Image 1 (spheres, rainbow over the protein chains, first blue to last red):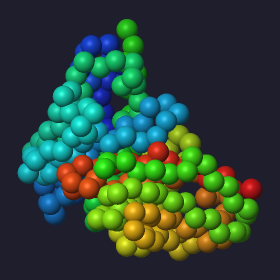
Image 2 (image 1 turned 45 degrees about the vertical axis):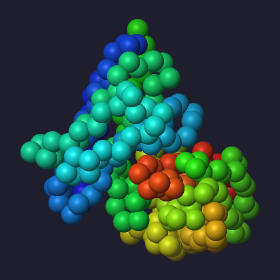
Image 3 (image 1 turned 135 degrees about the horizontal axis):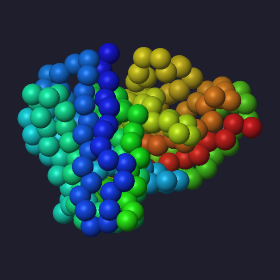
Length: 119
Length: 108
């Protein structure tokens, strides 16, 4: 059974870069031609798509975050990663990684990791 | 357009039927998917494609679409269905994904 697990610092200082990794277990990240994505949710607010990456490395980013976001994939480690630069308090959120399955739906999610931006 | 619009809150009496809607231009080209999120938990996919339920999702959940509006229907709502529901689809260009603002469902 495929599982996703986010990891990374829970506290990031303003103006620094937020870095998170999603480890995929129970299956290969490069098999079956899936997209993989990052979604975030500020406290008390809704879901926001950050970006998605194809197993081959093609990326798609939310235009509102595009200048600050980089998503990459490491097939040798079965992981994909998120980097968000120049963070502010507005980037404080639970960050989820997820697989994009049939009909472009996010069918498998990680449990989420809370990241707080504060000095 | 890259926006999906949902009513902020909907309520339903226990055992009754409720429909949660999602509007957006992209829904003329792409199916919506629907997610249930309970407090402190990750979202769970409940409907995707034309009207498909992942394994383990009760058959009281169903989906439909007409024009620029997608709907999630819960037939015979249960207390455990009380949650936030989000719709999601590709945007009209097909290059991006977008979420609706979410609907808080209260089961009375």
